[in-house]
Amino acid sequence: MLEIIILFFVGISATILGTLAGGGGLISLPAMLALGIPVHSAIGANKVTNSISSFIIFFMVLRHRGVTLNEGLKIVPISLAGGITGGYVASIIPPELMYKIAIGLLIFAFLFSFISKTSFDGTNTFRFRTRGTPLLYGIGIYDGMFGPGQGTLMLYVFSYLRIAYYRAVGLMRAATFASCFGAAISYIASGHVVWSLTFTLICGSLIGAQIGVRLAGKLNPDHIKPLLRIVTAILIVYVLIDNVWLT
Image (tube, rainbow, N blue to C red):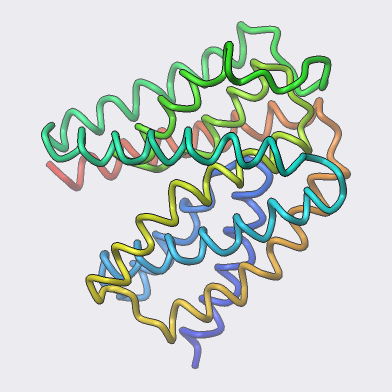
């Protein structure tokens, strides 16, 4: 019973953080592993939950006219193609190299946030075909290869493109849905998903989605960069520690 209660609140908090700045896995995965849930079942539950919560969050932002359906439909195949590519690349390179790539990308994003003049001011429309496509495809590859920090890196890209923050949240969740959906199917097919635990996590995430979207609509764009930097710094430490455990 205690495990169910903990997972419910983990789902709430992870989805709120994932909606606002990415990095929800920083809460959900360590918590599930600490509860003794097998790693494949923990990742599977996380992928299924992220697929559902991301789908719902996108349509919540869509309903509030923060993003258009056309934008969401255009970003999905880019992230899906990147995820498939990343999955293939991950199968042919050693895990140690994947960790180095992850740390390098996160450190670059962290430093770039200080030296760049990017912002979520919404002065530009979402022209991903000219500038954003290679970046979003690259993040899709990263998500397929490794994963942690995918949403955070994507928000950095939208900041670089000067997309309004609320719109960026909707687009980020559309991309997250695309990248997690295929993985969720794979984990379900392999029998790794423990449904009693996963449904509890989903219930919490549905509440977290409601809270996260409301907070995203009220946050001052000037406060987003500091939040992203904090999450990025934690992600770097998380990946470094995970790499130490691997070796």
